Image (cartoon, rainbow, N blue to C red; front, top):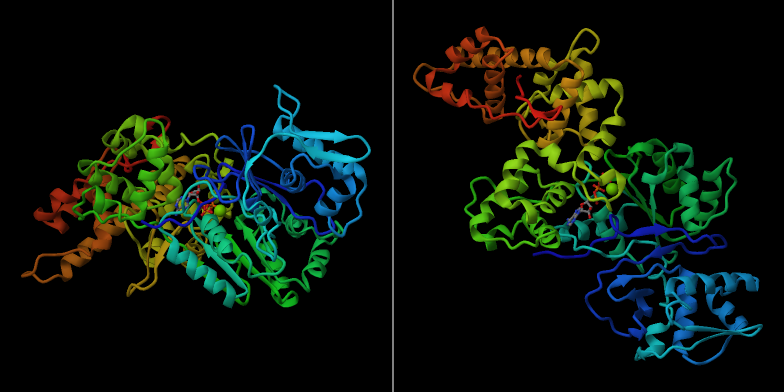
Length: 591
Ligand SMILES: Nc1ncnc2c1ncn2[C@@H]1O[C@H](COP(=O)(O)OP(=O)(O)OP(=O)(O)O)[C@@H](O)[C@H]1O
Ligand SMILES: [Mg+2]
């Protein structure tokens, strides 16, 4: 079982300090795991303060406190009952910066609001007008107080990484590798499909690198940046650089030039060219700055090291599993961990282990989707959930309300990816969903081309879809093989139906594989039975299912039957129902 850490990406929040500027650090709102008590913890009223982590908990719930307000709280709690002058507090909270008293007043008021000071009999801070403040509540714990409360020295506190919420499962090796590669390559891009864990892995790797960069580790979430022109400004805002809004990149570059810093440019897919320009400028002109980017496609900048992030491993279909064996697979571990936290709780029984393994495999080992599915298992039970996965897109639209909007559902994730494609890429993506298994570039060209999109253009577009993580490639095979993840395929089929191309493309697919199977039958020796490559077998079955189904073409079904021969006929006829959801009813992929 591998546990590193995970982050408040879904459930915590990141906020920038309104007093930004002059090198001020962004505030982050802690959302730590809270069940343990920490060394140096100080308790007062219903609160626990962990100075070393700049963390305040009310019961088990993290309390939102900005960086400055937290510093004031720690200073006062360190010396309960002692009056700290305004000058003293300002020197502590804004070292080397001249600020007027109003700043202190503003931060103390914010702190009071966070603590509920003055409400329901709570009394923590006392103001001595014109002089300063003192902490008046009883405190316990905190030893060794001075050491724990001292602001961490060095660069390890110079970061805005979100705090831990859930364990990150099955990624320890990848995280260590990325951390190691980042010190050797100044630009590393983590590439993979939506929800595979790029952000989580980037943040975990960045956490390992905290303390390495004098000027800290800063994450810029591009998901919130809607315009390419705003990319450089977003980075400048996070590191506290001043810039001319007309040319933010210039201001950013002069701020970065002499810094030693790690930048995490997260969720870049929709602003990839502006991020690429920025990353190229950083590589050229800010030699002490390293960058980890996450995106569904590479930035394509010279010097970029690309790390393709794969799915979490699921048990193979053939595996005989009991609960213990199943939990060795990270996809199952994640499912069980999330299911336990869901409504109704969950324990993995031995008899359910193969079904859970099956669910994880069907969900392509994609953490985001596994999480969505697992949250329902407490209520539905393993068997019902497995059955409902037939209709997976519907199930997965029931996302958590607290999740980031882009993650609320898998559909939102896919809509987002699809919306970023060019019209030609959208067309080809939808048409590629006709393939039930893998496909070659030649098969893609044969089936997806038309009068406006020539075969060679299709090849180009398939490769582009591969770099955008919508198509998976196995380039190690003798002839490169491509495939769509199951969920991506189900989504593509919806698009194909929506475009009214479903029947035409399924016909073309059936004809193509009919010809292929006939050619193979002709060339195969009479003595040895025809064995179709595993790759095409799923496509042959899909072709048969369409041809023999309603709206199909019985003549193609006959040809397929004749070419495949009686032994294969039964299996060809058993193409499972499609997972496509259309208007509330499950349609057959071929119908
Ligand atoms: N290994 C893991 N263990 C536990 N949870 C994970 C793991 N990987 C990802 N998750 C969870 O899955 C969800 C999606 O992960 P993440 O946001 O990192 O994916 P992403 O690849 O960055 O997605 P996007 O392309 O939409 O930005 C998050 O809720 C994250 O906490
Ligand atoms: Mg992400």
